[in-house]
Amino acid sequence: QVKLVESGGGLVQPGGSLRLSCVASGFIFSTSGMSWYRQAPGKERELVAYINARGANTNYADSVKGRFTISRDNAKNTLALQMNSLKPEDTAVYYCQSIAGFRGQGTQVTVSS
Image (cartoon, rainbow, N blue to C red):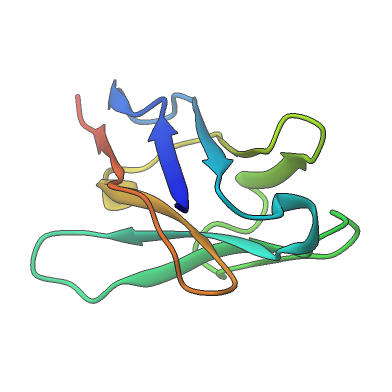
C-alpha cells in the first residue's frame, strides 16, 4: 500500500522559512521521480518542484525559483522542500506526489502577517 505523509506546514510571516517533509512507503522510493504540488483556494493545482530518482536533476516553477529547494534522502525514503523568503501568494496546501501519481493528504502553509 503506497503511503505519502507530508508534514512541516504552518503559519509563517512574510519573509520567513518553512521546511516540508514527505515520508514515503509502499513503493521503491529510490526509483521514483518525486514532485511537490500546491493548491490554493479557488486556484488550480500547481507543480512547484520536481526531483528525479537519484536527486541529480531538479526543476522549479518560475514563481519559486531561487527561494525553494527540493531534496531527497533515498536511504530514509524522505522528500523535502525548503521554502525561504515566503510570500503571501505561497499560501496553499502542499502535496508530495510520486511519478506514478500517488500523493499524500497535504500540509497547509499559510504566509501572513
